[in-house]
Image (spheres, helix red, strand yellow):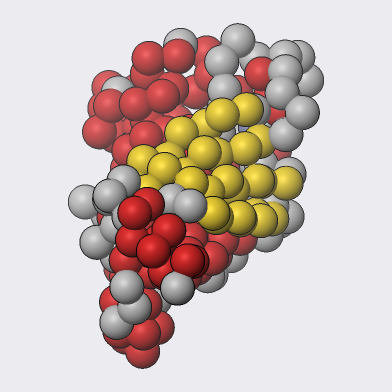
Length: 212
Ligand SMILES: [Zn+2]
């Protein structure tokens, strides 16, 4: 495990790329395809090593090689990398914010935590922006300028599973039983990059609260 914890997740390296993203990708690659890690380390330097300088071009090289690994490996790497980002991003939420969110009833907790999760997107890449909406236990997150989805040709499968895994893990860390799936991805021909957020078990409670 990388000694990521000594870095704040909001720290950017170069060109608005977050250390959080580099550390998470590095760890995801090393978990799923360890034999290929030395290859990726030609571009992807773990934070803290060699005083890493990083730019958009090397990042796009890494992402395009990851796409060539095929959907199975790509999805596994992105799911794990996203989970690391969710965990490390949760570790960066202040104790005050955490206590505040935890003190609310589950239906409200889901809304607040989803709003906080927009930070994960921002801390991954400064140029990306997330907007969220939630109603009756179902939410959506839209991601503008996803760093994973800037492809020249239409991709065969969605590219932004990283975000769905990150947000899902982040919500779970707030004890919210959530599932997040990519419902549409710009890279694979969709109009936008959109995540569907399903909160299990709180619909009745929310309906009761809204009716009150
Ligand atoms: Zn996408």
